[in-house]
Length: 355
Image 1 (cartoon, one colour):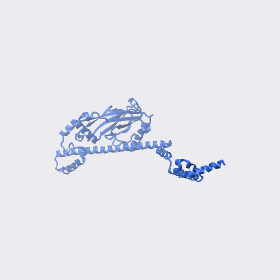
Image 2 (cartoon, helix red, strand yellow):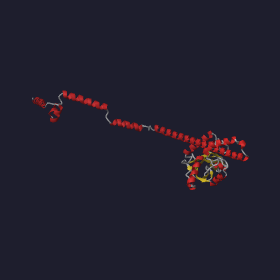
Image 3 (cartoon, one colour):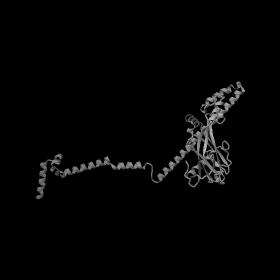
Image 4 (cartoon, helix red, strand yellow):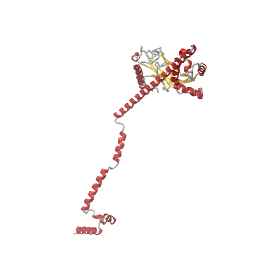
């Protein structure tokens, strides 16, 4: 994800020159450990400071597939007129998956990879760059900075992604996966050891086999010893590749943890802003409950109304106010009034009025 302020003008002073310019190619073989390599598929990328500015430039390398590639270093700074070499490793598990795809569907299935890399660069202040000058790096040149400097770089890039006044240069590179069939043929032809062509997933078994051979080293001929040394070299390369994969998994977990922290901080900031505006979470549910309670008549109110009606009826009966209902043909009978007595009472009332 690129920030809103990213530009695409390579002539800007905060832009690094990137080699290769447009795509990164990873060569895939069936068993890289048999061709004398370190047992992995990787490529390198050179970032050069063109010297358009006297200040240092910071860089960061991102990918759409962080679980598939291990980038070292993935961020850092580059001095004027100097360069930084970035090593990108294709994780062995994905290398095997890609090779299986090639065996089933051919090279055309790998020619349309959607994997991409994003290289970002921006200018940094002299005070910030001074912290990185003459600082030793783990693994020598091209290795990682110490933890404190890595955290400062991460914080700087987080700030740059939200600062619209800081220009950031962006360069996208596509990925190509190419299968080297010649290396596979050479591996089959030169398979002298008993463990040639074995996948790196059989690492424990290969080590056990090596232990058994070393126990009989005093009975081996010079040719067998040479083969054993080559086998040990391959096992060492497998162990290095296994360690690299573990490091990649650790970095993935660290990146996931950082992203979770950022999401949590954003959620807390949003909640605080809502509370300051008086829009507390849950207010809608409280309003709906209050509307429901005000829309109906409670049982207590109903009982009070019935009680008052009964008292009024008793008072009216005692005062004779309800006798007039007895003259009504249907209602008088239902209420139990005697029609004759009612008529006599009415006549007496009329007579008294005349007198």
